[in-house]
Length: 64
Image (tube, rainbow, N blue to C red; front, top):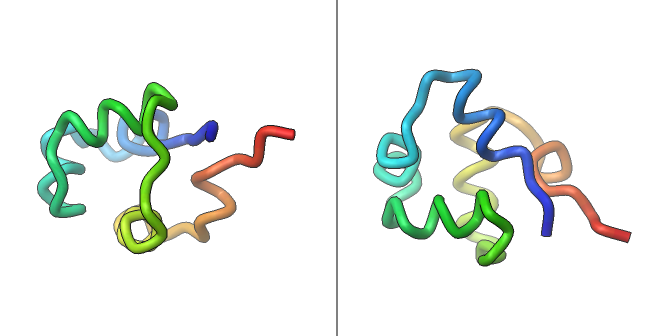
């Protein structure tokens, strides 16, 4: 699944480790999500939505 996490994180001057700490996951998890190698669980997607203050649909993009 495509996502805008790397861009959103950069706009907020956050490192992968910063975002991982805020989302209560590992930095490797954030890296894998950014690279499209891992799709987050729904609870994690909601946590990321809360962190960025955006609806899930503006973070994760449907690949049709």
